Amino acid sequence: MLKKSLFHLSGSVEKCEKIGLKENYSFDELESFDSLTGRFARSADIYTQKVLRTIFILLREDKGFFADRVLKAEKEGIIKNADQLLEIKDLRNDIIHQYIPEATFELILDVLKHSSSLIENIQYTERYLSTRNWLIS
Image (cartoon, rainbow, N blue to C red):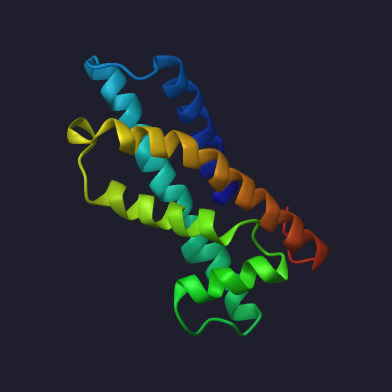
């Protein structure tokens, strides 16, 4: 599920980077940015709420605040960067509470910027899972 989500996110990032930032967008361009933000939020949810939560349960670290768990996950080599992941989670929350045509340029810029961080952290976690033989192809 996560791999498929990342595939679609990567495609949306590529398409939106080609559109670029400008003052006015066509309907189709707005749909592309809406799709990007939705795919970003969905990928972040799958990663944090399904994959990482499952890892925390397996490691018996499923109690406490998300921030505490990701800090420990960074120390254990499960994720690459806890600060990035906390920013990704905050951005996901911003996306959920804003409607994209009314969103600021900063939101779009943040999604484009943090998409690479999200993908990088997921790849880092895949390597961790592989070393534990927990990765199912």
